[in-house]
Image (cartoon, rainbow, N blue to C red; front, side):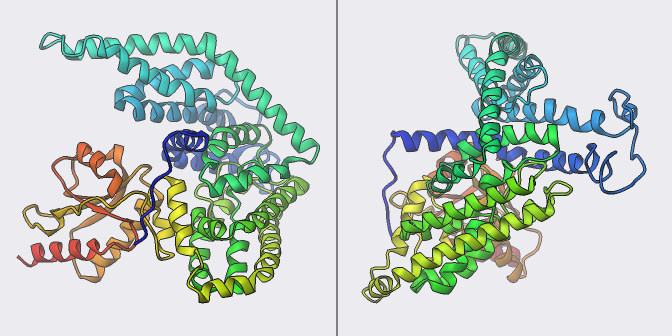
Length: 521
């Protein structure tokens, strides 16, 4: 096992990375709501599949008056569902999630109340950015206000004080958001929208790939994607029914083209692992799986930039796009969210971006093939080190890249948790927990679930969750080493198991054996 020190705290890259992680933590748990809105939009707006001007002649599914909306000329679902969801529901969910991250459920409630101030004050402008700001700030204000009388409330009055303190903070935060934050955020959103519009009108938006593709490899893309592209793309989608901004970062084509080139022209471990990584990246949407290949041969970033720019240019030429964010960036998610009439442009953008990346990467790989073979023969390929650097860039162990072999850990290994060896607690519920409760923990849960199934063990559930969502019901919690202490605070009564990475830990076999012994007894 290769041990790599975590990047030093501080510095611009780490600060932006943390900011992006926080933004991602507000948006990612609500992606299902974005997908639902995207499906409704694709069907029912005027240019949707069953809209007034859509490609499918269909009976009107419902009159808007039945859904609480105002009467419309054609009786579609536009007023009833599409508008209110994007204008009110999604920003409120984001603000609630951000507040909850800062100060639990009560912080989430106050954040959602405060968000209504910026939503209404912005007068129709999509206020994702405002919700991302006011939600956490309102929760933080509640947290500090309550510290003033912490431990000083007479018994029996705690609920009264807690409810009224949260109510007053929500009240003042909503007013502040309405009068002060909303005008500022509306101006910022309009300025960003104008800048993006200028780039599109002048054919310069493909140049965004010069920033986006390197940012992805360094795990700095969340701040750009969730902080800029998703809000502006949603605004465009509401107005025109589609936006190519959703595909600037999420397009799976460049990564697929890179991995295909390595499959054919790479050497050693990189070539051997590239086909499996391609499946994970293109079908599963986990783009970080190709980052180590770029870190091992940095010149390949040129291929990704060329591919990303060609994909953006293709969508600009065909005026194609998605109706909502595609997350994760899987080809399936992209196709599901493709706007009516945009399938040709979107599919071509994926194919062309993959082809351009493949061609440029092939030239780079062939040009350095002799040197790469010589390093491989000397045992100096550097691919394992690139995997470790990738985890250092991410700030934690990566389940996606651990399947490539030779994965390191971000920090020195923590002492082994001896809880695996005990049979004192009956195990019926196993939870994999990570920061977001999605990509890495989901992959780990899948691995253990298959092991338990092959062992013939029934009545044991294996799920993945965010650490913040641990509710005390899990019998056994599996986390990466640097997250175990947080998990213990959330669920102190569970058996806790620390692993180096979620994909190939030998402790899984110990867990399976322990559960088997319990069932046999």
